Amino acid sequence: MQTKRENNSLKLAFAVRIVTRNLKVLACTISATTKPHSFSCHMCRIRPALRGLPYVCSLMSCIFRTFALVLLILLGCRPHPPDVCIEQHQITTTGGIRSVRVVTGWQSQTKADVLLIFHGTGDDADAMARQSQLDRLAEDGEFTLIYLTASHDRQWTLPNTLGEFSEDEDLKLVDAVFDQLNDLAPNTSGHVHLLGLSSGGTFALCIAARRPDVIQGVVVHSGRKPLDDFIPPQDFPILILTGSNDETTPPESVQRAADWYQQQWHLAEIISIRGGEHHWYPAYNSRIAE
Image (spheres, helix red, strand yellow):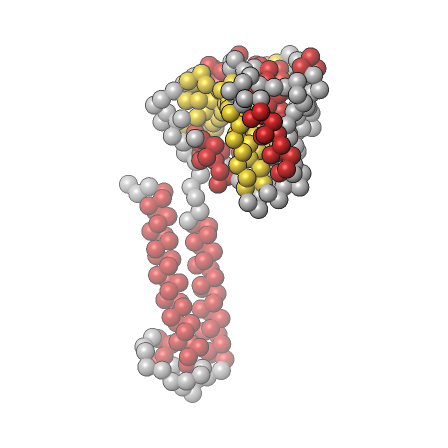
C-alpha cells in the first residue's frame, strides 16, 4: 500500500512531466509565429499560413493548462494532516465546566511527555493548533498535547502578586488539568512542559513559578517577562523565541528578559527569528521538541 507521501511524490512527478510537455508546446507556438523551425511537435505541423488567431488561442491554452497544473501541485501535494487522535475533554473547576483539546499519537509505544499549550490574545485552542501546527509533535508518541482556552475574552489575566494569582479562574483550570492528568493522558511519563504564545507565554511563566514541582520547562514565543514575583527556581530551563521585526513584543525587551533569567541562574536560551513578526513560526517546532 502506498503511503500518503509516496502518493504525493507520484502526483508531483506526473505533474512535472505534463508541465514540461506544455512548456515545449508553448515554445513551439511562439517559435511558429516568428520563424520556421526543425524540431517536431503537433503544433509544428500547422501550416505556416495559419498564423495569427490560432496561434494566440494555442498560446493561451498552454498558459491556462500550465497554471492549472501548478495549482494542482499546490493543492494535491500539500503536506498531509498529522496522524493523531484529537479529543475534546470537559474539565470541572470551581468556576464551572471548561473544555480542553487533547492530542495524542495513534500508535504510542512509549511514555509521552505532556505539553500544555497557551494561545495568544484573541485566539483559542483550535486557532492555536491551526497556526502553530504543533499537533505533529504527537505523531510519534513522544508528546501528548493539551491546549487550553482563556476564560476572559480569550485573554490570559496576568497577575501582579502570587496571592492575586491564586484566585485566577484560568489557574484553577490548570490545577484541574494537573489533578486529572492521568485521565487526560493515560500514557504520560509524568513530565510536563509549558508552551505559550505572546500573553500565553507570559502566563506560562507565571504558572512555572507557582508549580515548579510539576513543570520541567517552559517555551515562550514572543512573550514578555512577568513581574519579579514570578521567578521559577534556579536551573529551570526556559526557551525563548522572538522575531526580529516583532513590534508588539520588541526583541530588545525579550533579550533583556533572557539576560535577566540567565543572571538568576536559569537555563535560559533565546532564538531570534530573522524577519519574524508577532506570530507563531511552525518551522521551529522541531527545535522546540528537542
